[in-house]
Length: 316
Image 1 (tube, helix red, strand yellow):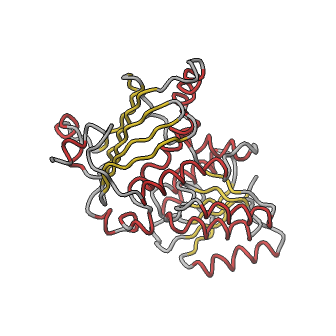
Image 2: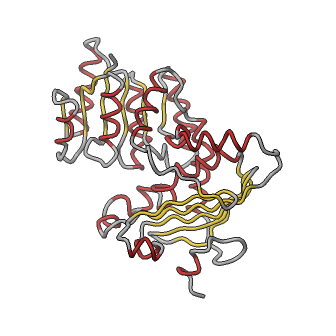
């Protein structure tokens, strides 16, 4: 049985990690979050030690390490801008890291993390859950049977409505979250790279605090994409039905249904990591470069091949 700690225990995604630790037959022994609304721990690991101060958590982890009872893994579910620091903490504590998306905000952070891996002999694992989704795997296998020079026409739309709290929280601060493309979209960009190969072109048509859209070209695909946390951008039929989230990906006009099964993918990710088959730093480079370039790109407006939803967002 492996011993886990978790950083960011009060966050939205943390329960999926707790469930994955439990489902794989392991134990959560320590948890950290500055917020103390963490009753969810009782559903999985009521005996886990809990800390609201990083310094005391650090001291506890060091104490158990010196007693020969070191952690095996630290799961990192903290705000995006803290991932780099918390992965360093995990490795320097003698544990492997399991980090939520996005791994880091900028690609150069990955080089520093590689040095820490070399120095400590520990490993950083990441959650790239869409690579494990059965429908995405099936689509990748289908694409592999087609001519290598074929460019698929892809539209990706993901609108996940958020209330006023979003912009007040760290998620609304681009310096902490990386912006909408990074915070809600990085695993989609990883999926596109996984399916369609290396990136060849990256253009941003529109960018705001809540919405961004652009064009990506890969070895085997041309992709129009739009991501938003603004409910005003939902399709009319979704608004009428009271739907708060709209997710669509079409490949050559065919809708790819992959909305189900997201919660189980964390357990699948943990199983792969425990078997030594997890995704590491190099697997993240393309997606992190993609979102960093989007963040720093000056939008060009409705020029070229842009997402059709932009007609409702940019009126002129």
